[in-house]
Image (cartoon, rainbow, N blue to C red; front, side, top):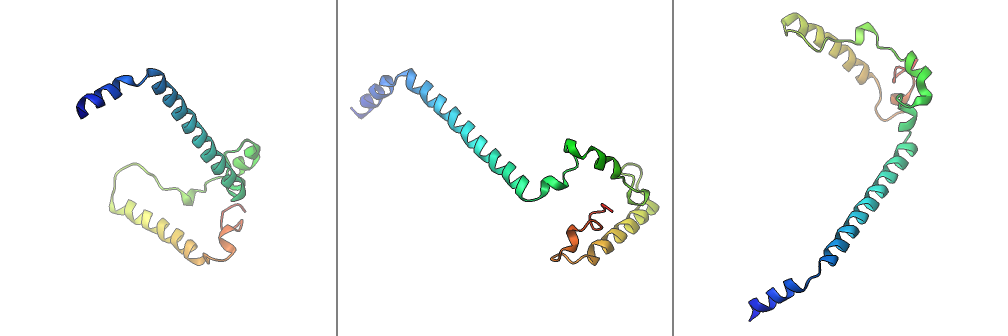
Amino acid sequence: MLHSKLINKSKSKKPEHRVDNLVWLTLGTLLITLVIMAVALWLYRISGTAQLDLSRPEFNGVRQQAKVTEDDEFESSGTITRGTVNDFMKLFKARAEKIDAIKAFGPEPLSDQALSLE
């Protein structure tokens, strides 16, 4: 008896309800996506990250001024030898000393000198 009631109920569902549910699911997903994207863009602007983003078109002139110096580069491909490890460790220690010299909770980490903008 119970089995026959379940079969009758499953047969009575109309296909239009499934289409309506799919439409509502799609619209709900798009709405949630737009809300999350709006929050992310709002956080991007108010956090100050937008001012540091050199990929923005209005920073074309600044982007050309930002150059990597020779002492900051390390070849990322090639053979690993004792000499290359020593070179890397020298560069790493020099960079670590610069990082350790900056007080993390003061205003110095965001200064132009710390960000290599000068």
